[in-house]
Image (cartoon, rainbow, N blue to C red):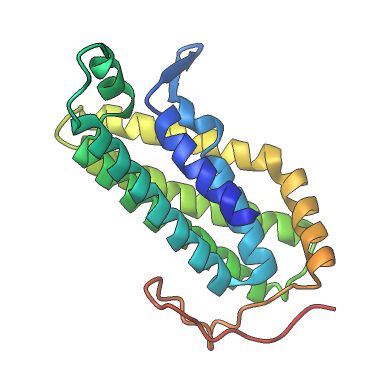
Length: 228
């Protein structure tokens, strides 16, 4: 269930981000409505199941996102039927832009793993305590992950295309909006994570000395310690 929602959000956010909307004097990609959910679910997955399982889902999401982009690109280059007059509209919404696609995949990879590693290590230091400490590690890990995601994406996608001041301004605006999203969703995130722990009977704490945090490792050695 978690993997399905996670992947769906990634694909939907990519397509939705082709539309830019305004709130007062601020503009945002529409994918902002759902993309922060990936960090929320990453927090929940790492909090409940540990870094190793979260890593597998991050890689699954990356693969599915790449597959979606590849499919959109292949569909776009197929010759349109003589009676189908919407090629320009398709290209505008789902057209493949290599630099932006690379930026999105790289930012996702770096941001999600940064988020998961920070939460995993904070949970170990805090001995898996709940309450305020649990809320803080959710927020702190998202702050790190979203910062990495925003900086990597904007740098790869737009350096040399738009003025540096505009890039910095956009990074700051998007970052603040995403972190606020996490804070607003925090009561749900904590309750849902603790509910999953109760239902699954699982509450792993990774031991940093034993956990392989290399994102390219297929498996990691994880502590068997559980909170009763």
